[in-house]
Amino acid sequence: MTPGTRQFPNAAASAGARIAPKASDLTLHQLRIFWAVAHSETLTKAAKQLGLAQASLSQQLGKLETNVGTLLFHRRSNEMELTEAGQFLLPKVEQLLRNLADVEDGLAQFSQGARLTLRIAGINSVLRVLMPEAVRLMLERYPGVDFDLQESAPAEIVDMLYSRRINLGLLATTSVAEASVDFIQISLADDPYVLAVPDTVRLDGVVDPERELPPEQFDILNRSVQFVFGTQHEQRVAEWYNAILPQHRVVAKCRSYETALNLVRSGAGVCLAPGLTTLQQSAKAGNLRLYHVDAPPRKIAALIPSQYRHAGPYRELLEILQDLASKHQIPHLLPTPPWLAQKGAV
Image 1 (cartoon, helix red, strand yellow):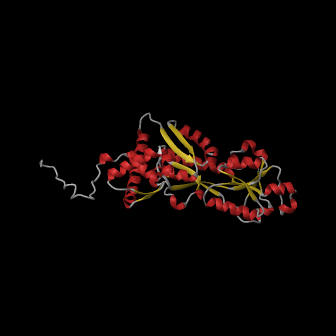
Image 2 (cartoon, rainbow, N blue to C red):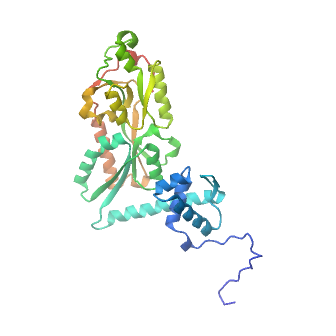
Image 3 (cartoon, rainbow, N blue to C red):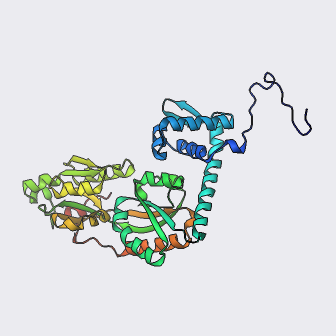
């Protein structure tokens, strides 16, 4: 035996033994795939998130398990459940990816001549109403900054924060589970709810809609257009309709407030909507009547990892967004009709 080398037992004696992986065997690509699969319900969803073919994802995951010498997932059809080894590895990988993102972002701020990209994902209403002016003001202060803006659903925003694909998320806090958020939460605005009705339906001073409204207006009032969140918020909104309009029927469910408000504008029905979403419709606001609703407002907030909270560009962007949000008002907002004021809240 050559001096300095180690003699291993024969294959029979080492049956079932694990060979520790070499650092060079583990790739960053494989670890990112492991993280995505661990945080996805299915392989299909993880592959879509990473932009990979499912066969390629499975192959890389298999190589990682070969490299570490043990299974990381229990496979049940298309579902994946972490093994004990996978549960051990996951927080280690998360810390590694977090540190790598910190290094990349930190170096970008010191790179001479390089542009610092602010990676932001947000819900439609916040990006369309607040971000255009915020971007303009930021470019005045930071000429070397550029923006990567993504319109996304709240759950997707949280996923992108965890995977470090964005550094700032803008969403309604009622749309995500509080326990799933491990980031600093910065309040931006209280977004009041409004009842959007076609311009032909007039609720001013109405105490008893069934008796006071013409039949055609009462019929429209009892046709609801609802937005589908897929969260507890959806259930609260449904309960509001049941309490306020017990005779209503759902004529449409939408995935965007823009679509819902356009349906209301056409006379299809009425819609309970956050005020910010109606500001996107200002060019056509004359076709809608907006009534204030006596209900808790939607809480708009920024979610940001702690390391970015006090970094210059992000700190100033948050201050700008807070200032812009405080100045926004809903044009032509009408007082709560008496019959609505007597009912419950969302």
